[in-house]
Image (cartoon, rainbow, N blue to C red; front, side, top):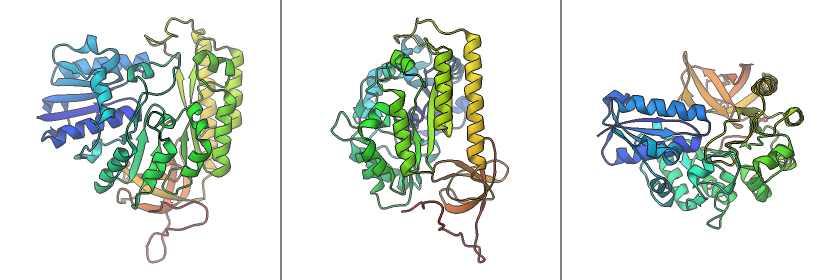
Length: 420
C-alpha cells in the first residue's frame, strides 16, 4: 500500500504521526510524496485553537477526494465521530492511548525524514480550564524509560543525532510509574554515542517538584540548554482563573535557577492574550514579567474558547483591547529577541547541523538550540565551530572557523562542547 503523511500541531503530535507511519512502512508499505499517489493518507491533527481545527477539517476533506484518509491526533478523539464517513476513518481514544501502552515501542525507523522525535507520555496531570488537549489525551500515561532509551538507540543507528523528547508536559513524565524526567534524561545521556538531546515543553508546577535534580541533568553536555516553560500570564489572578496550579513566582524561580547555572540558556514561554478576566491590570502585569524575564522566545496566542472546556462559554475581553495587547506583546518579543541575537555577533558558537537551508545554506543549532544559518554544504549532524557574523530577526548567521589546514577548530573557551 502507498502511504502519504501530513502532520500538524505540537512536536508530540508530529512525533506520534512519524512513528505511526514508520510502523506502517515496516509492514511493507511505501511512502509517497503526494496524496494523489496514495492509497492511504495519514493526517496528524491539532485542535488547540478553533482556527487550526477548521483548517484541519478542510484539509482532511480535500485529501479524502483523492485518497482514503486515516485521522490521528487530538482531532480524532474530540471530533472523530463527525469526521468518520466515506473515505475518512479515525483512530479513537482507545487506539490513541494504546500508543503509550506498547504500540509505540520497538518501531523500526524506516524513513528518517518523517521521524520528528520520541513522545514520552500521553496526557498530563493538569486540569487547566481553557485546555482541550488534556481532555483529548486523558490522564497521564508514561512509557517505560527502557523503551524510550531503546528508541533513542534505534534512531542513533539510523544516523539521527538530534534526539527530541516531547509530551504535553515532559516534567510530568514518570509520576505514574515511579520515575521522573531527570531519571529519563540521565538514562538517555548515558548512551555512549555522539548526539544532542532537546527536552520538550514542561509545566512550572511539575518542574518545581524536580528542579534541583533537573538542573543537574541539564549539566550534561549532550543536553541543549533550552527550556520551554509556558507561563500563560504574568498575573496570579488570571493564573488562578485558568486553574494553572502555580503562581508567577514559581515561573521566575525556575528561570532564575536555570540561568544561574546556565547563563546562555534559551528560555521559551507561552502567553495567552485575551483570556476571560484579562484587563489592563493583567496586561500590565504580563508586560512587567516579559520585561523582567526577557524570554528568548514568546509564543503568543489569542484566547480561543474550545468546546468541552470549563471556559468555553466565559465572557472574553473586547477584541480591540485583545488586539492591542497582542500587538504590544509581539513588539516586546521582537525587540528582546533582536537585542539578544545582536549581542552574540562576534562570538564563537558550537553548532550541530540539522537541516538543509535555502540558497546554498545549511541550518544548525547552537548548544542553546538557537538556529544558525551557514553558507555552504556540510554534512547533516556534523559539528563545527562558527563565528556569529550577523543576526536576522529570529536566527543567527555564522561562518565556520577553520585552521590553516582547513580542519575545523573543535574547541574554544566561550561555549560548552557537543560531546559524545
